[in-house]
Image (cartoon, rainbow, N blue to C red):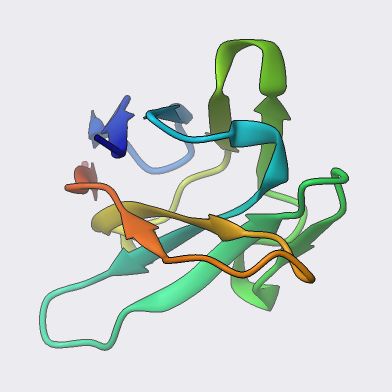
Length: 119
């Protein structure tokens, strides 16, 4: 059974940091591209950061220079280090994984972890 489990969310003051983790089980992790999405109340889900199976990364402009995505294939885990957090970063953060092109396969989602940035 395939599972993605996020952890590391919580309440933090503006300017603070959090590190989210996405642990995968039940699939070949090293062929997966992984993305972190977030959804704030009343807003559409947006892709925040992604990392390919080869380690290439991409970020939405609003988090560049503040967030860093990384992967540890030995531990089947992807991390999202979030620094200089702002109130507008408040959202539920979801991990998404799917086989990296040209491999074809289903897309998987985690259950989400809440991040709240507030003083």
